Length: 573
Image (cartoon, helix red, strand yellow):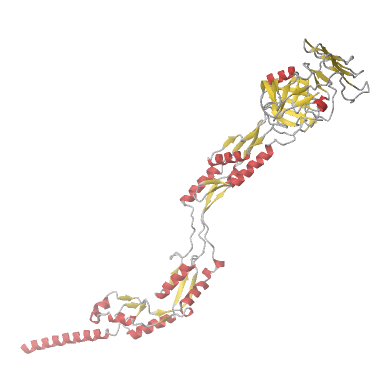
């Protein structure tokens, strides 16, 4: 029994020793071989020696390639031999084996195994890799479409909308090259350019908050219309489409407009509607059409001020109605801007008319600036700049009172002159006219003064046609045949009618004046104190012979100017 037991024990011991020996023998095998389920850089090196594993890695290196997958699904391949790719042992494989505990071979056989990665076990020519990358079809300029940012566009309706971005197919070349170098260095075999975010992306997308804000601003500021009231019911509209073409946002996303374009538009508007300096048609009281220059009366826009005002209005982002900033404005807007209230002065015929609301209030003969002395009254369309009653007209060496003073151009104005003139009209202005003012009979000056308003247009022109208005005595009304003015000092004035054509002015102090009519055309001026002056007419054959006085010489000086102008006027008879 004991022998049997001993035999069993011996057998067990032998079996144990055999098993241990066998396990140890297998473990010794794994001192030079990799365990099962072992990979290096993805290559299965199970039960291989270091040399065998390195050989297998080297063999696989010869067949190495990298697949490059593009956005459209195309796959391009870079072969290992294109880039000088090869395995170089640097002891890493031996190091992996040395880490094995060869006595742990049995659990390793049933485990998940070991995966090793070598960081520097291969070499390649980086310049060749970069060249291969640049040669990829997807990297060629002709194959790349740059991405497009989302942007604003204006539709036909005038509304701004956002056009979505476009991704494009343009690659970030630097990023692709870096990705390939990293992949090859680690033995990688596939590169997905989409997954690795190698495509250039749009900088602005449709959901960009800033772009949405811009759209809102453009839709607000590009729908503005400005309606201009130009006077007389005439309007001009600055259309939204034009405003939209001027609008933009500055670097701070603040609304701005093209100032030069705004100024150009205002200048164009002013060129169309300004009338100062224009020669506009005017139909005279005698039915003749003349073209006096609009000198101080008419429309003239303040272009600089209006440009600034319009710019500021646009910045409010709201539509509006505007009246331009005018330097000068007329009473009406029409063919000549004059309307039906005005003063009309015909220099050729020495005639003046005053119309108010279309009704003729005054028609009278006048005396205007002395042509022979070079002080002819100015022509053009002016406006009344003021009015003063009982004014004193001051010159360099005189002061002369007048009852009614109505200036319209510098020192030139309409005023009464009966205190020194006894006759108006005819050709007096040619040789004994004023220094520019409109000498008017006092009665007519009074009517004008009592009815006229500052700003009233005054049209002064020279007619091409002469009309036989004759001469009018002081204090008369237009069209009178006989006017008699009497007084102790003045004497008597008798204007003859159609048949006699005779005017007698006489008096104890003033002397007497005989003005011949159509038959005699002889003018005799005489008096006990003044002596006698005879001026020949067409009947006497003594025209233009000058002035002879039977008594002592004495000049009569008449002062006739506005104190505010400094344009002093002296007339010597």
